[in-house]
Image 1 (cartoon, rainbow, N blue to C red):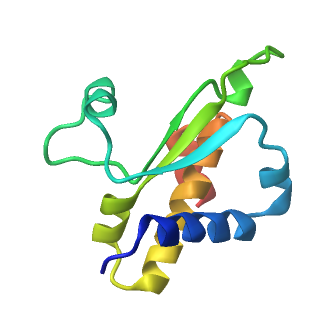
Image 2: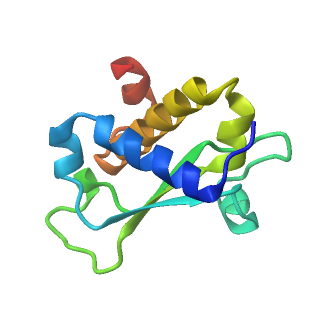
Length: 121
């Protein structure tokens, strides 16, 4: 399956609209971006092996660690198009993967770790 970058961005926006409103409304100063694949810097920082990849990545200071401090630069959530496409069988499964990955990265923004996210899922 192939889609354009514009179509991928539209799917991200649709997923964002489908997430629970109270969580989305409280997101402040976060850029949600799309990228084909994790770049070399991200791969090195996360110590990813060649056989590993990411579907999404939250980069920033989680709300639970800010202690009232405001940051001027936005936090960043990146969804990686190629790994999400590789994991999807059709458009419906791609939409679900995007929605799930976006929710997962937003949970990191709120300070949840992988164990807590798995528990909530």
